[in-house]
Length: 216
Image 1 (cartoon, rainbow, N blue to C red):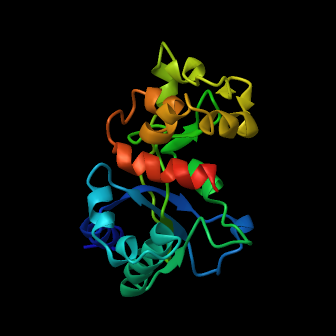
Image 2: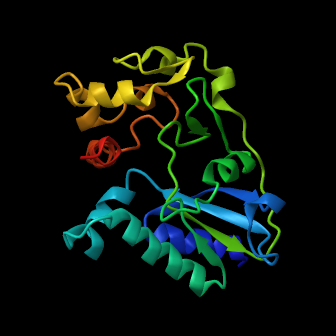
């Protein structure tokens, strides 16, 4: 069994999955021994119940999901002589967007959000494991290129996200309004409109992330 298979197996036991493999580039500011980055994210919908059963989810302390990610992915990396990296905890911030695009399984969507070949616009990363092996994997095809209707362009009820980009203040103003509850409880309507990965993310998980995004 190779290193990638080992990571995939241990990740699956924790409700995670490999979302892509990125070759390391000079600008990544990583140790020379690290040749590949294995990007890990939730294997939805089974991920959320597994996280909810964790100690971190029930201890009442802040940043439960980040703390869970550090423990779980850190342990996998340690077991397999790799190095764990995370999209939180900066600065400095790791360039997860660049890494994702480098996998050949993620692309920029018509609204600018990242889209994954299977997870759609709900793609998210809990961490990455750097390994010494130079791993080559097959690349995918950008699903937006064969999407005729492109519902994401017209899905935002606040008009905050579309072909012209993303107006974050307008989005948060909408979320604070009474009609914005539709996004707060079920997740971003733009992300939900994408036919790729439709129905994977549970509403409770979406509500958790929307609350974190909106902030206090």
